[in-house]
Length: 350
Image 1 (cartoon, rainbow, N blue to C red):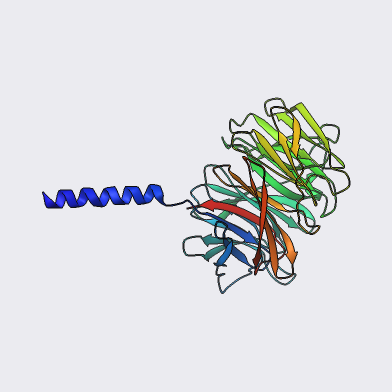
Image 2: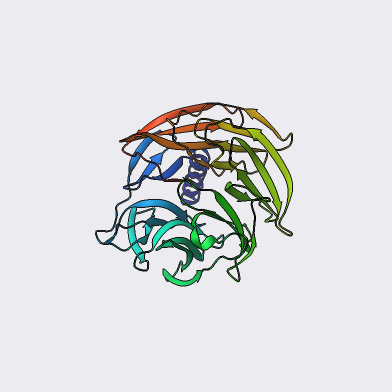
């Protein structure tokens, strides 16, 4: 009888502790040299992911499996090295393996499919663009998406971003001519790995970012420029069904965006401002200044949708992280020493 009561008390205490324990938000941030782990609640750098002693370590873009058990990191190589995709165990906080790429291939982005089975890695090889498909289990390249045809010749561009629909059937591909060139968008039929739609400039001019609704029926595009806009596209017929325009002046236009999980607000980041769009009213609700020192911040939103994070370059040895409370739209910021030119940010909670 004593043991039953003792076990009951232990379970009760554990339950109370579990419910009382706060959820901490963490961020992985790359700067081209390091992959840092940030405790954003405590506003501190907890450490760096340890690279493998063999191969290239130049972390840029981050892909996270849905179960958060693996990170896939793009490592670009110099002229006499071979680029790779580093595989990181976030529990061990170290690189545990890598996927070698073809000689001369430089990875420019990595995105994991919603089912966690494949990593789509955009490559630039001798100025020819392609997407390598990596089997997550075997960590081998099993296929390529090549020769994007249509209104725009995507084979001459660099893939900027790949966004999968939650059902895994379609993906938005955003490409760019070069670091300073214009943006173009296409729709990929994922099961067949073929491009089924190339948007021309009259449909989507300079789409710099995108996300897809939770029901996989609608794509949202941020259109960059001094008069920026949000364009909403029906993924059944690829028609633009709504456009919301707003002026950004001459601060570089919209380059990044994230949305709250309920799609009540969308946050757009330019070089100097964060614009907050209320979806219901189709109006900008606030214009807080982003103190990013002329560097367009990378955006992320936590899983609960309560906080938006903006990470940007500050000095040669530090980066600036700004936080926005999505309920009040109030902004705060803190500085992380030990990371500089921010390349990517991914959030997780524990």
